Length: 192
Length: 117
Figure 1: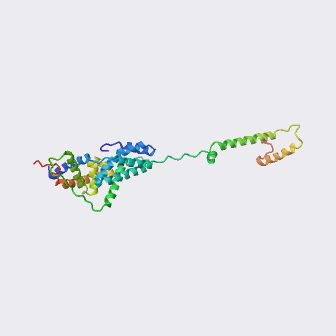
Figure 2 (figure 1 turned 135 degrees about the vertical axis):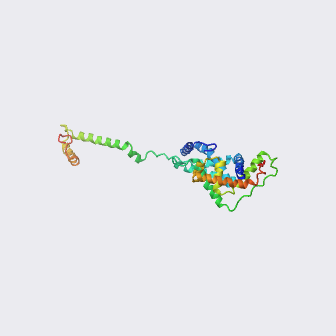
């Protein structure tokens, strides 16, 4: 599954070993799943503290379901992403307003340090992501930042692959429009 | 390349930046997750307490004791049913007659060792 992936069967086996009392299996699953959930939740919520809460709650639910995990059901990683997505949705619904401002970017793009540029682009992308409809944001983050395949995203979002492709395409178009006004500040120059 | 297409192509630079500066799983959060895992660890089933009378009845003890008791009764009966010696006290036949009565009530014959049994 995308970057730093482990075979799905291995994930299910790790969960079964945890249910059998092996804490090392829980450590392996945590190192496998939790970092990806954290990146995902942070992009969805734009808040690292809330993202950590989401990750902890999702993993706790995974531990609790471990003894009853059925062979052949969704893989633990997919299941965890689905739970995290629902928890993010709940958080977003509880928020009032909260559309973030586009970041105040540095003026001197040509002289910007590469690290600062990366940070500025990340902030700009995050602000633009937060303006997307939630489903588009979810699809774009899972596809283009987490690197999941469309079938994997479809399993997480409980939609068809075509719907994922549509959500991703529309999300990227809207992102491009939102970020168009900041090309120069962010190091994208028109050479023509 | 159209401006829209151009903008979408440039998005990869933003995505790459986001991947590069992604938040990492801190040791505090990892410790909290592992503490939750330890708390949610399924408890091993409690061992069955040995020595209960149910276990005694369901094991080898009851059949063994029953067999031993029946063998003892059989031996006792064989001893009683044997012919009396000549020097037996005068009241012995009368006393054994009670046993004949009991055996007839229980198994339908006076002496189970007779050929008719």
